[in-house]
Length: 191
Image 1 (tube, rainbow, N blue to C red):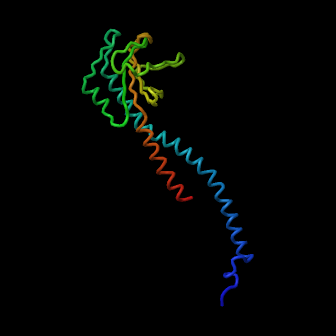
Image 2 (spheres, helix red, strand yellow):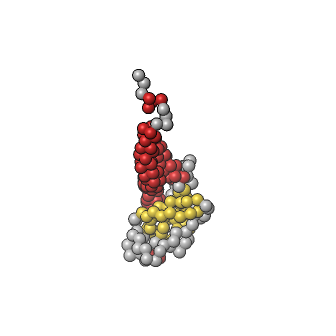
Image 3 (tube, rainbow, N blue to C red):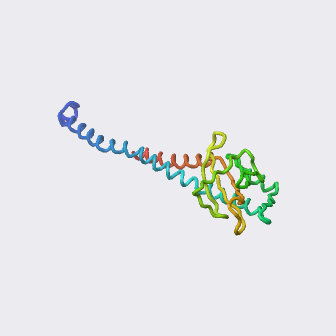
């Protein structure tokens, strides 16, 4: 014998089952559709932080390496940066890398003259030898810059030398996008 309800698609039991399924779907899907974009935003934020870390470390090392090639002799900077070191610094297939060594009054000692001059805030209290990071824009591209100050003991701040190494952010963006895609796709499949 067959169940008469199985053959009749318009029976009250079938409508109740679909209605219950619809309610469950509404109660589950609506919060998921709200939470998923939040998850994407958080994932993007953390992916950018993760992507920045190794590239920031590399920039710090470049700035430190250039700073080690500068000696202050009687308060005057003497730069010994061989051409091979400059070539190694620029050996990046994805991003453009720039550097310059400048005085506080804006005099270029070495490097790329087209790189924008640093702006030091008056309330900023930098320490010589510390490496700092900042973001700026240059020729329509985002740049991440590592910079440090060189000074002798008791040297007035106006005579400090600034070393900056900058790179465009294409590799960072690519890595962050890969991280986001690797998290978002499994989330979408689970939903």
